[in-house]
Length: 201
Image 1 (spheres, one colour):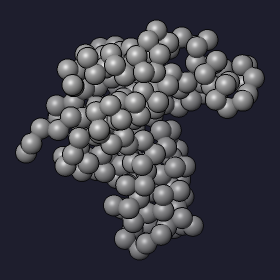
Image 2 (cartoon, rainbow, N blue to C red):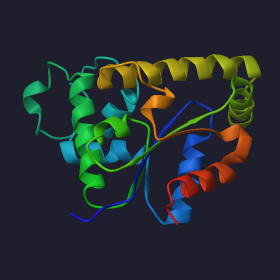
Image 3 (tube, rainbow, N blue to C red):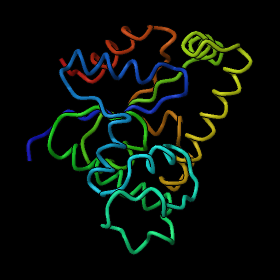
Image 4 (cartoon, one colour):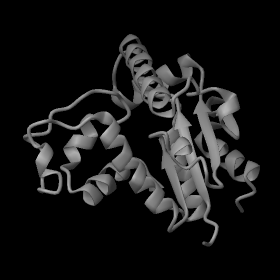
């Protein structure tokens, strides 16, 4: 199997992780998978994409009788499907992509899913005040509302990651090859730093 360039990006909400991933993708000519993973997982499983969006990076138990789009899992139409089953389907989609091509994965515990592969695992963070400013501007909301949203989103991401990785590792430096504060270098500079660190160009 040829070696592929695989970058897994974890991120605090409001740190610009998705934007950094997009810059990396443009600079390196590598596809970026974020919400696209939900579509891939749905396509491979035959399930409605809305089911994955409703469970995206947070834990819950969902009933699915009204959202099936095929009969592949028809036997479960009335009994529901757990987050663990959805996580496994999404993980299969991540592995399928990583085995075939270069890719940048954003979130969804992709570093854990691909832990047996040669990947560059990055966590992007930023001080709360910088993230509040970014989210406030992006969404056009007050700083107080942005702060509450950030804390809620980060809590959900941590619970999701730690639950499916059987630990308490989300955002901990020892869990990644590189942790970087995007407020220091900016989006473009952060992408440049990751490229230089990983010797990707």
